[in-house]
Image (cartoon, rainbow, N blue to C red; front, side, top):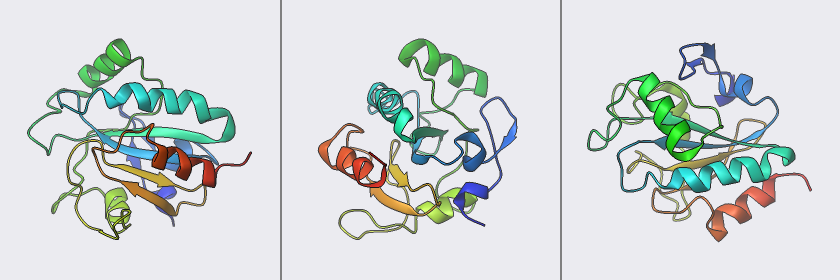
Length: 163
């Protein structure tokens, strides 16, 4: 079993998995929040999703309220905000915990991956990003302040996608 097979619910409450949400795709997995200073990253995330979808990349979002209570809404409120404010079309999953004893199993796997400095461990804040290959292995980890359309993220995406 890989990270792609771990059960998770969509934002609308349906049983799913990362593999079912984007079959055969590479993924950019992001813990998101609606009331964060980094929330405008949704714009670049949606642009990446649209730009690279035909080549096999899907952005996926996991709302999380563990950082400053910045994702307090219900699933319906989160979906409405993302759609109305940022035009989000990429798959969104249920609100989860990414750190601590209640950490979702997907984030058990993701947090064991190192960032560019070789650091593993807990998520630092909202909008930490993980690039996952189609086989379910983590290709790269980017900390929250790294913009989704930064040169290092774009280079990592290009490296794992087919031409």
